[in-house]
Length: 455
Image 1 (tube, rainbow, N blue to C red):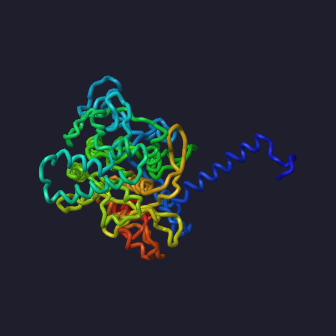
Image 2 (image 1 turned 60 degrees about the horizontal axis):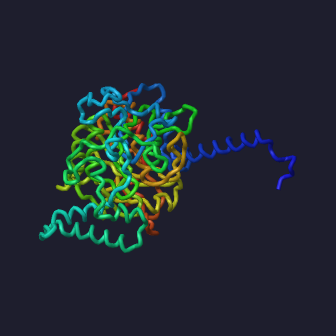
């Protein structure tokens, strides 16, 4: 123990706490922006990318974030939240005739008409099994579909028997729970889209969407909090995911279409599930986005599974076997160039996961002007989305597919062996994803300059 006379005075102690906390925050945030070659840290070379972009003129890029909630008034996000300038606030009229009344800052597909959040939903397997029961009650199930429904039934029964928590009982594994009656849509109509409200909630317990948005575009160099990856973005918040259970395919499909119809060039989807009850509806929405040149970034999942063997929906492959050219799946990497580089919980896939991105201990925005760290492929995905936004902002002549191609070809390819997630098997990184590497902003910018012949 220090002698009393050596203890700092209260004002000095406060300064030290704030100063040390600031350093800790900076270190937590900055590792993902480091350069692999010069810093020996598996970051994305973001600072070097900005050095290459000095003096260049950029255009604003609209990025839709489909998630569970957003603090659109956060001190580090408020200035970059998308505003629908075609809509007159609060007049109760659909001024721009897009089907959504008073959608000034996006839309909430998970609320009542009055704006009360509906955060709970059935698990994916429960949704599928419930649909199966309703469709085939008293009938012989279709032999082609039966294995899928049987798998959902077994997953449902296994969860029931495992001693689940109260939320599982009430929502995730409840065959009779139906959020449609609360949301104001028709459960039997997967193409309904007029439900929900324009009210975007800032709920502390639902901090995921706010955190994801901050990684992409928190205002840079404003002396507050953190710097997002991209500096010329507008975030379009769309609520379509849940706190309990799994997102509904209808909500995700509607969210994708809303983003496309309202000018988004990129869509971030930091969520996944292993059962999809209305995959066709989502496929059609993804194809709609592709037809409009909109890129979709999707989290690979956090179960240490092989996405090549077990799909984590939504997926890039349509029901007819075609692959969506605009769909990008992102794995979760860590900072050290050793066997731990790919996080053991990250999903992977030599043919289904496109690349990896930093996702461990990422500092970003959370509700009520706060900041916190989160980990997962949910954090890796907006890191990648941010780089795509950076490319589209400074090289607006690039198409979405060109941006995807640049990001795939500009990855940093680790030379070391790594553990295959979920195992202790030592493999090269190209066994974990299509590109064989981790996204790199500096390399991507260099390639974009060469491709566009700009100076």
